[in-house]
Image 1 (cartoon, one colour):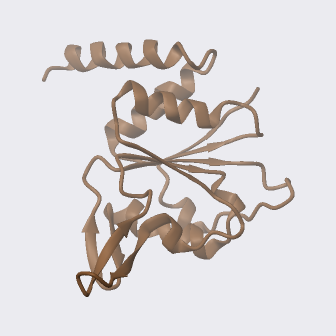
Image 2 (tube, one colour; image 1 turned 135 degrees about the vertical axis):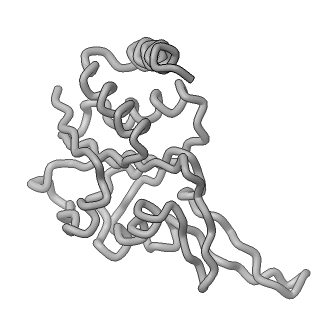
Length: 176
């Protein structure tokens, strides 16, 4: 695949995402940069700026398997990565996959959940794998997290730990 072909595909992606999100060309460009470099993106900004819609439009344009987690203060790590449940019929444990088993995970309002739940993403973002009950599951080389974050001054938000911030390639601020 040559550079001109990649540029043509990127132009098509920009046009399609631009049908849903208007006036955020630079941010769409940064999402493409994150995708092509294999990095994760943190979208920061006040509510109502289209952060969630941007991630959804980006995934739909690329036909990526899309998963979304709406982070809340009562979430547990298992709500993100999944858990093993005992099946009484087969007398064995069966993995119930969490929303992290996807190509593009939208971690919506990631700073509204406590650090313990935020930490559930650490291994996935670094190794593109998760470990559940001692067994490691591969998420694939194309796994990407796009997280949204509200300003820390808002009630009910937790600051992201430094270990979590280090996993993001880019922190992009979206304004009105």
